[in-house]
Image (cartoon, rainbow, N blue to C red):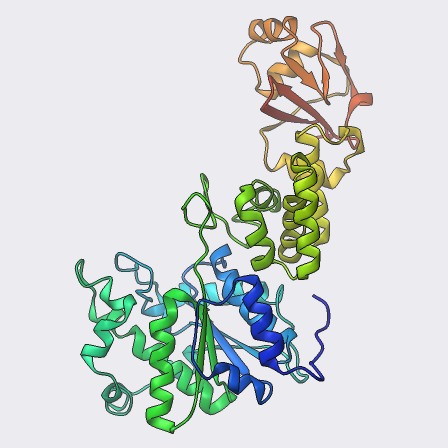
Length: 432
């Protein structure tokens, strides 16, 4: 991430809010936020409950709200919910979340820490991001004292009007999740007192929790606090963003590989790619407009899709993984000679495609190679496929009488076989 610069002549209202506006990142904001930003830099926070060992794509939007704030000269605070994660946020959920034990929540917190650094600059200098765990203050709360000092400022009628609560009344909500709003409001109060935090940002489903914290700060401290939310992202087809047939898209490479992560972005609908470039990259407005203009000229090249996929994959998984994923994609789609792909690319594909070992100390016949790859269940089936020119190896048709040897290995190790147009497999010829 490039080193950010504090604005010298423009106010944060000019830089931050204007930037978010053209990117489509504003859904709600408190009325006086622009006036407050016009007076100077601000500290803002977003909260993330560690309900899984990894962040997912849906978490990236509030992170981007903090990242743009930092680039505009503000100070971001990331709150991981080691405390609230034990309760469960009812926002956006139709049923109760399963309760996690303390050890699981603590492990999830530790695994998520490094993922925030992909988007934010942490350190000790002015404007550097800070990460805190709300377990540090919530775990020691005295229940009676909390109810007296915090709970008395919330009325049941007001809480019932919050969307996160109202949407759950028909199906039922436990007192545990009902109380979540109080805990998140207390987080804002604590951060206001100890970090000078005046702004909370999040998704639009968090607006009720955000305004609850603003009200608590006003009632307890007589202070002015603000909120800003981004719209929840959906696809042009109306489905939930960040989901595939395989399930949720995660930032952890062990859960969603860099190759599948890259493919998620490059396969986006043409109707969505412009929005996603604005939401999930730091490309300028001119750069996005240029990519879209090039797409209008040559839609088949999918230029903005490739730019989107390369940018986000490099940020989350690093430039090398992004390059490997791009090469792997181009190989499988016939856009790159397989001999031009490096070993790292083939190792990446070996984790995605069926991959079998093959001893090439001596040359083997094409039939044996096809059977070894799993593309045919028997030698008879392999012969029929080869006779019909139904199998290719390293991008070229394979014949029944062809011999397969070490000279044909890609990157000195792999053979790439394809049955028909889409069924792929690799043979790994490394020495045992």
